[in-house]
Length: 355
Ligand code: NAD
Ligand code: DAU
Image 1 (cartoon, rainbow, N blue to C red):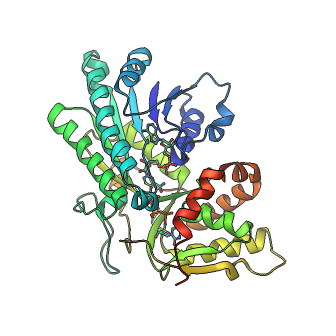
Image 2: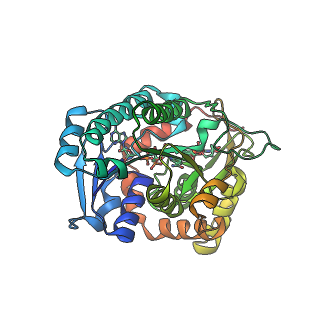
Image 3: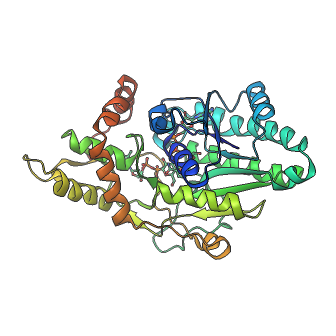
């Protein structure tokens, strides 16, 4: 079996579902169930013996030692993290705790487990760390997309904490020989995306007739990847990646935020027309995110050239599936908008004036 951390969050849950369907191999899923973790995402695996869920923290060494000894996974995929840039600006402490200290504790526990394996199991063991393109910092309009050799220049507490975790993973390979793999992926979107992030926030706000808060001029550029393509990339890297190597993962899909918001509005106009008028009437430019990175773009040619992976979805096909999913899952959408969610919306948006 494999150990997945953070498998109740957005990408982790999509990965667990994808993994069990694609490989049939059991998953031990360790997740602290923070505000971002949701077991409802994994409801279809509820009585499936191939999914074993453990509620716990990657910073809990005793728990990790017990789980590794009891289940003897052949690989670890580390998704567990605090993942939202705006939350890292309001409260960076949790990001250091999980993304830096948690990754350190996990690496140490996994290293002890790996060292105790027999030679064949040790050679085939893998630790895959799921990271982000944000560690590379911000690009100018004419700069080439990030390659794996781009210097690390993180700008937010979130990206700095992820950069630190990437450095720890790298060092555990170079110093101790732990067979690690790192993936640096661009912005994901798709089913089970918590509505604090741009795409699901715009969908749920539009459906509720609420303002669509676009930071600043809305011309910040991101590269967007449908989450199931990220899952297939991770499976590919786990299977065929070179230990010690890093792989950029992206959708070849650079778009400014305002264009993303307009595409969502146009799809909703088609799929769920609002008698009050086109959804784009709800767009509001609001005070920008402090330190907002202007542009990310990923050059995903290494993973294509060396491992034969390319995304299956275009933005047009992926966003249509995503909007459909939100329209088809009103109960999930309603349940994730708990009191804590509403508190976060107040914290992040109440003080922003209309730009
Ligand atoms: P998410 O916030 O939706 O989920 C994170 C999960 O980790 C949650 O289930 C949460 O409960 C769990 N978790 C948090 N702290 C934990 C701890 N101390 N111990 C155990 N579990 C803990 O995040 P996501 O968007 O699914 O991102 C998953 C990973 O992918 C993160 O490492 C993130 O940096 C990376 N990533 C995300 C994106 C993106 O666009 N969302 C892109 C590239 C990389
Ligand atoms: O690039 C990969 C990263 O993508 C991941 O590592 C992060 O975990 C993930 O959260 C995401 O970070 P971003 O900051 O790019 O994603 P977010 O959805 O928060 O914002 C996308 C863009 O939209 C960004 O330029 C900020 C803007 N935005 C966001 C929100 C929430 C708005 O204009 N309005 C909003 O209300």
